[in-house]
Image (cartoon, helix red, strand yellow):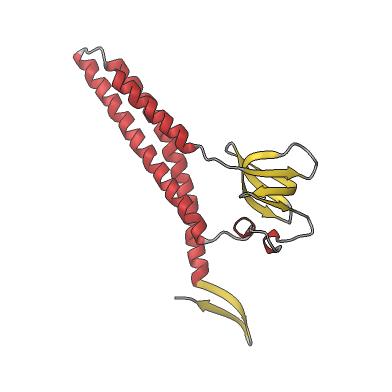
Length: 197
């Protein structure tokens, strides 16, 4: 029973630690409200509308300034693209994301999905062991079954959320790959379709 509990605690600690992502960005709202600290800034639109994630919640707020990757940046509604302001290193969050942006997220989501699949199958295996022990009359049947039930119920949501993130990033990567392959632009005698092979 003790090895099962130790394995269960270690899996739980790994899952909790793996799912926590440290973010140190800061947003200073226009309305002079409290600053939003320890968040992840995702995107800046219309000069000062900042989309961010904090504690797995996504929100948009108008900001007068931000601290992004240690860089303090003042924002204004008059600036259409803060990435073009000299000295600002915000190209990754103001412009359309590059293909390389999605690759690590896709790999992380694939790992998360695979961990969820493994946890689910390990949990089902433990439940089967618990059921096998119940037919022999062993005292360990309840421990195996409860451990399997807990591991399986943690693994399924991890599997689902990883699969959804993986699918969304795969679609974005496919879109960017296709966009890079075909482009439409002006020509001297009209519009031309370019195919880049």
